[in-house]
Length: 484
Image (cartoon, rainbow, N blue to C red; front, side):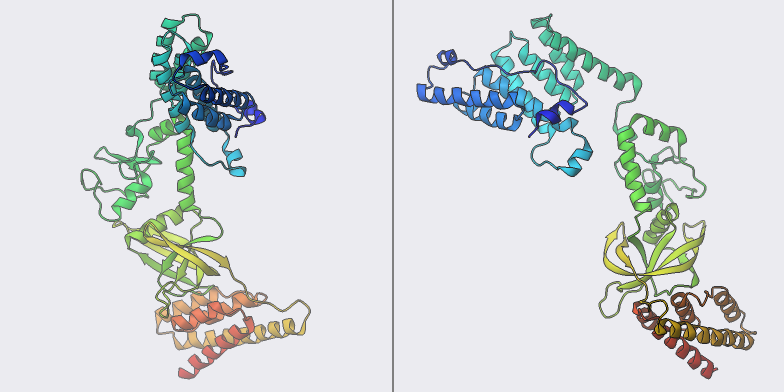
């Protein structure tokens, strides 16, 4: 399992007094008269193979040999001593193995804590057999240090020093345990439940202390308050909001400084929810939106209030999608929208202004904290190659439809002078008109000028033929003009 190169290059916690194992001599047969000569010969061979494997740093193979020997002679101190040392070596290797190595070459099997626990069990048994030797106490102290039970390790060291006060290994172990305990007691506070959020039961991240004196993760507190403006513990009414409530800078600094690894994990976990990556998208299930639209949303459901808070801490983008009536699940195509303005209201709602951007196809979707998240692929139209007749025809069609659209808008504005809402809508659409040099965007903008049913808009999202979308947009405008 652990090669010599890996073992020597491992950095981190080191073992003391376990440089080698004991040789099992033939004369030991006298200690077990009940074992036949044949079984003792097999025991001797197993110990010889185990010791050879240990010295070649094949520790799992060594443990296997020692365990088979232990089945033959369970109370033999040499067997227990050597197997304990092998368990400790495996635990040390696993504990010091860098995460980057595990990513490239993952290991399976028991973890370092279990190996150290097995070593501790053998060391306790060995102390009963060799109480006047320092070796069992050295083994026990190493096991307890690997298990991070430093107070008990120091007790075992002191017991061993009473047996052999001159043991350098025990002195070194005492220095290691004392240094670690000193850092924990004086350099940084011990990791206790006092630093945990009472809602998620994890290390506090961006802690907020309420006026009633309770402390929670910022995201946990406001997720709880989506269902009522009371403290989750004492039910005191709270008049706070994400916009006005600041995190406890001092407490956050203490946590970050004293528990850096766990804090980094919590930060990464938080960022994975707010910055999901280019191919993951939170979904707002409401309606079909086309690119080149601007609209307003009133967010009042608890699940979507949580989603909006996370989006606002990230890239301000989400997908808008409709439930497909034919399947009962979310439609396969949707559109990305960007929140351009967000107004938190006193009752916890959000009033949003959003602009639609790109369309995408949903590969799969799942629930996350009550709202949907999807894995997506971005979709574009299939364009004819530059310099071809098809490309020229597409541009000419776009220019002609654009000229008609400008005329159509002027006529619609003239007709809607007394309808302020309609006039505002037309002015907004005119301001969002893209350049005709981008036929795809222009074709979507054209479709936003007329009222179309959701399934018709969904069909336009699925369509990858720009010319066909321009034709449909022109048809809808002509039909709307004839109705007026």
